Length: 523
Image (tube, rainbow, N blue to C red; front, side, top):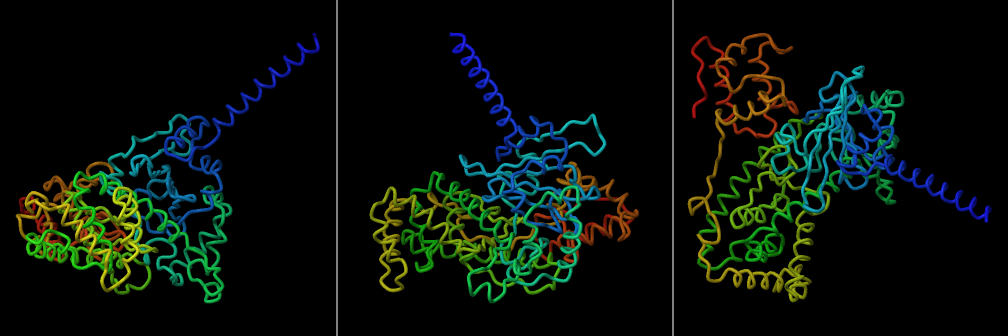
């Protein structure tokens, strides 16, 4: 009996010890979500970015991109790049930079995809400054305003479309690194093994191999081509951003009526978009669609020009983005029929930058999700879908046309779609100085950027002729920052200027600097 009692006592003690160890293991396990990161930092009393990196799994320490010219709240340089760690899925992206001289040095930024809502969520974790023993780690609210200034109220990823990622090592897809990139990367690789933060990163051999960014003919021939980190991140973020877009479209109240027209807009073999609407609508839609396309082309060229200006290598022409990669027809239906603002659908920092270029055809990616949803309700559509590649007698497009018109039969155009004033969209759109200055104020008077009183003309006028930077006065700095010469440092970051905008804004600041009564920009 005593033997049994001792045995049960030992088993009980072992159970308690095991449970305690498991609980400790659970507390020390990082769950890869923003909430999990926050809990991990609290539980393990982590007080710095360096301590956090020590505990990260290899999946994050091995998958990252290096940004030498950051447009985020975390600045960077060639030798001290911003690191975007994206793991194997990019559902949680975490970032830090490498020098106390750069802004955002004590912060860890998090960007998470929430699968339940198909949306993105931002958070900033501010660690105490080195040597400050009394300060606490500060966890921001979800989607803090300082982050939403660029990521928008409905947050989306900010990552340039291939084949060009200005400011990141490997700027041009499948091209050799520029001299500036090569020199900067070598400097980073020399410092990395002993750097307080970068030394925790693994898989640095990827950045030492020229074939990572410029695959040799042999590697391509034998199928040993390495996917550059920029391209890996693009594929992953494109997938997640597409989920966000399709959730927004498919949850719209008008989706059922316009689902077949949406599908037709994603097919390269289907005829002009207006033919998928009732015949009485078609002439007016042709006019309005032409206006939409003309304005869209203006925005697209501005975005491409500004993107090229941010490159550190030669300023090559912006290239061409096909209509397929602008999703023009798909967005037209979303805008006009579903009432969805698509100005921030792309992953560009600037609004109205309709470049959805992806490493896999973007229209096919969206079409796959849309046909999957519709086929669950329409059992006949897949029988026609297989004929979509036939250029003649296209049964699939004919089916979409028939079903789309049937879904809209009996509706009036004004009832079903919101056209600007019932006619065409304007062919040009300029913002004007008044609106742009308010954008400047939204960052420079709220703590997001260095304080400059853009919302107070009198206070701004008093400072414009005072020394400010290596370029001289504040006026000189502002005129430089709004010009194309500023490249990645051009301001405001979310606007692509028209030439009239640029001229009007420059004139406003020059006039304000003159010894006269300051006035607000013309309304």
